[in-house]
Length: 63
Image 1 (cartoon, rainbow, N blue to C red):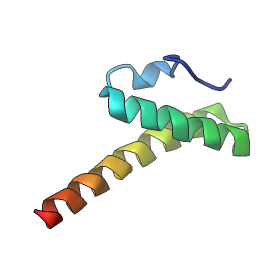
Image 2 (image 1 turned 90 degrees about the vertical axis):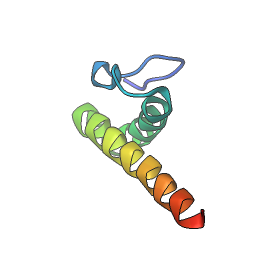
Image 3 (image 1 turned 90 degrees about the horizontal axis):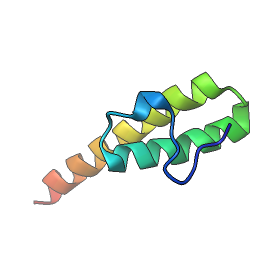
C-alpha cells in the first residue's frame, strides 16, 4: 500500500517531519520496485536518516 498525504507507516510516527516525509517518499519508490512493504519501510527510514546525516556533514564542512 503506497503512503501519501500525511499517511505513513506507524513506525515513522516519532520521527521528525522532514525525515518522515523523505522516508515515505523513498519507501514508496522501494515498494514500487520490490512490492515488499516491510523492506520498503525499513529502507525508507534508513536512507532518509542517511540523507539528512550527509546534508549535515556537508553543511558543517562548508562552514
